[in-house]
Image (tube, rainbow over all chains, first blue to last red; front, top):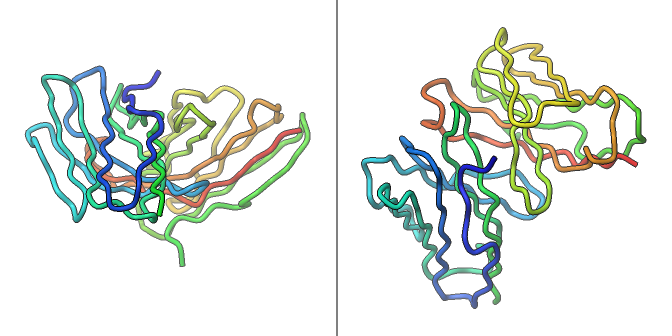
Length: 109
Length: 115
């Protein structure tokens, strides 16, 4: 069963625009991670946010966490064509890291 | 050189054949994982190992087996491949600690096709 579910499943924007994707999860968490996957390649870790944090930044990435709503969002500002990828959230469920189904982002040049 | 390597990168096989996918890492991590990825289903955990003597089933272990030959090596076997095992397979590693506290490092993947 999926612990995290991303929304939307697919997103298409123009270069320079901001991209926002959301993750909802079911059970209480200690932290939440976001990963990026370029087409057909391995996942790359982007950011980890802990349950006592509300917001975290890394370069053009901004992650928020709302534990009361059991949701997180990933914002990519000033998107570039190179940001085209799938983005996954991951949380712990029954002692294992469980990945959501991902949001596929296309950034058009 | 890549920290997590997988061989082969691509494999086409026939139903009923035995297949082994290999994963090696130079990160010195104790923990290793095998996932499969299917379109629209994200990543699902097949098996994981917290050290050489520790092997655990994940969400979808039926039809698969693993071997942790050394800290650096974790192999996934399909004893008798079937078409619905056609997927992209990833190996990953992480440091020890509370599960979820550490990022996982992924290999480049093995694309397996079972005819």
